[in-house]
Length: 365
Image (cartoon, rainbow, N blue to C red; front, side):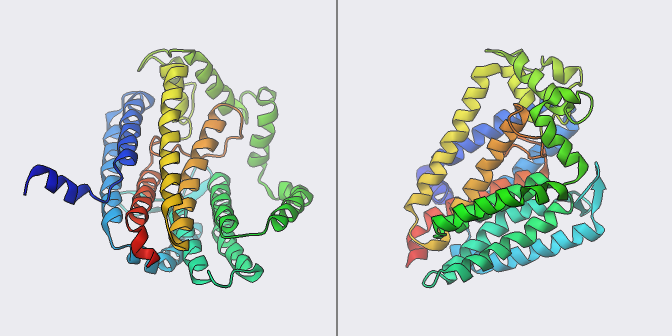
């Protein structure tokens, strides 16, 4: 058995263009994190460990029997809901939010699990109901979305709950939700917006209002947006250079390793660096959606599309957040931000998409 045969056997289910782009993003993100961490190598080592664990899970997920993903979809959803209830009762509180479960060696964020388990659950459900999809089926699908959405909102975690909601509704739309229902629902959302506004917490309202004029409260709700926009503006065309970001080094920029990690990159590598990274992300999105277009059954199409949309809406929200276009809602940048749960879940999502694509004919038959 020659080397090429061994390589083909080991990596035959990995989509090489997608995996290559992913590794490139991970390497650039790691280099950027060293600067964002103020060269604190303990966090950098932890980030490397998270990447290694995530890639192992990606490989395992990519190579398991696809039927296993289908069969265990309801179980992963049920476990995710149980963990959300548990974290609301006994979770760790940090920065005014109760989102984590202490597992000893690391803290688990159950809301991240729902980024995988909800698309799989909805895809499984619509696969079962493929021959009789109607308003009743869509209503049950809506309930499957609302339960984790509500539990995540109460943590509170507005950013993740909105991502869960958007990803789930996208799957229902792709499953055949009539356009007239979508339009009427949107009108209903506009009518109910005053009630939704009153249900938000004060700090959430302040963040949304600061989007209109962040300088109205420059040391409060608008501080994060202002400092991020300054960092992005400082980058200019070519950037300040690696490790030379003033906003980062002078510690004006908050949450440099998580929510605003891309602000650090923008300041140090400038417009051309940002353009290069966004181009790689766009290629990954295109590649994933191309793979979705080749899938031959309801479960694969809906699950892969839902996972893809969830990842890349996170990208849009994070970039919009750091540039002042969207309110600060605490959404990490996939494959770039520091955080074990987010990194591992994002890599597993890619593994599932690769698995469904490599076995597309098997599931359809």
